[in-house]
Image (cartoon, rainbow, N blue to C red; front, top):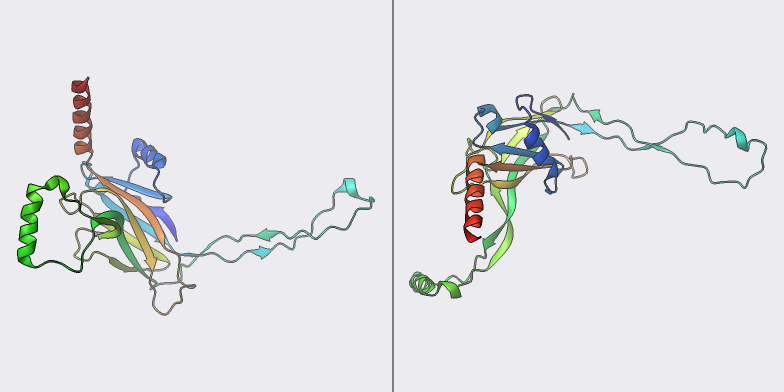
Length: 232
């Protein structure tokens, strides 16, 4: 799939430069500042075009002989095989391809133990933990944690279909709160069309999404700088 920019979103040169220098893994990167006074720029919109990449084929165009080598005997060489990569074809006559859009990231989460203690033992353990906080260590593991793709909807994972070769996502909204603290996330768009084999489905499209509060970040930076001056 090929991604097209939302025409409603105006580029900020400073933000664009910041996105290009990030060391995140995906090529497509978007940053949303929840403090942006422009309400339209606080929403995410994507237009993805479904394309088919035909296989490479052998170029049968005759190779012109080098005039300098004419008349000279040379050892027979293996014929050169030249391959041509055709241009992608937009599937503008296709509709109804099904996609799932998921937002998440890898986080350290507490390991759930199957042999959980009774309620009375849990209470005693909590009291002991409060008295010996330094001795308590919580085991964690890395897990993919899913968040709502669009906070204005109830579903965590969105399901959408294409129309005339286009998958359109509009007005995805995000607000920071206790459950959604912001930072870098990964948006994954996966072809889930029924009746197609894995080979017939399109490969997943991945993009990095950062949701942040510029005012809070500026305040934190100022506090950190002031604390550094006091230590000196």
